[in-house]
Length: 186
Image (cartoon, rainbow, N blue to C red):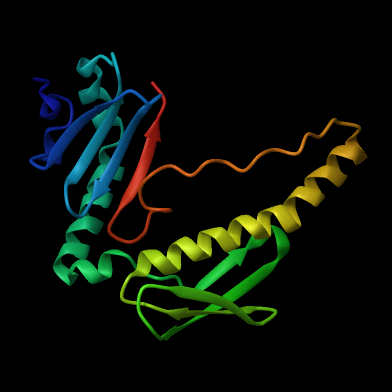
């Protein structure tokens, strides 16, 4: 057993889970409402290095655990907040999001104006809306950013190979209020 409080005793990590993963390539710190702090380590990682890593990221851990505790106090529904806006800074566009409850089990995304999207459907499950918004963002990246990258590469005389879509990792599509992730490369 590693004494994680040796390096960062002020953290008081009573809710700490260390999980070894064959897929992990680096140490990942995650603050989760249902489990507290989870540390994912690659297979064969020297657990003796954990106190140093936790000490190095002590401020992030404190802030993340505080957000988790706030989310717990507000209840499980507030753990997954739906965004009010999506900023596409590279394009100089900000899309306002409107949510309209209707039906059960499905959601639809409708572009109601050049800068407004409406998510219509089962809003009791925020993950449905978030998954749909992530898909929309990927499409926006392919439509707007890939041609821009290709043009810029051509202007600079660089080769450009169109990439394949990144395969999504299991779990929530992105960090939201009440959860977060920090990646550390040893």
